[in-house]
Image (cartoon, rainbow, N blue to C red):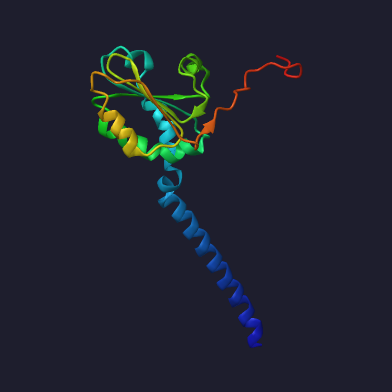
Length: 181
């Protein structure tokens, strides 16, 4: 008789444990969602907080121009560093973020020969291209170049890293024989 009464108690305990574990997982995801999704959120917010490039190149301030994509893993890795640079320098420097998946920025992508992302271009206050960073770079290195933007003579310098994402061709608006379009 005792074994019959213990069986339902075991099932009840198992259900309680299962509910407790599921609750802990859900609570953890909600509590730490910023940690898990911070980079993706930052990338999305970059485009929204960006200075219009037309304004940036005409307001006599140095410009930080980044080409990125939300699917780019290297862009996600660098997003917290770029965000801290933006927070520190945004009063003195225009920060422009252009998503390579947005066809609206196609002319800028061509003009600056963007083939890999992230690509960061730094311009002096006259709009002259001073530095180009392609791929993953250390915040300290980028900060060094930002601090040198005020110098009068800045020869253009390209800095490459093998860790970058190749731009994917946007085929959303292409017409093919089966697209009926």
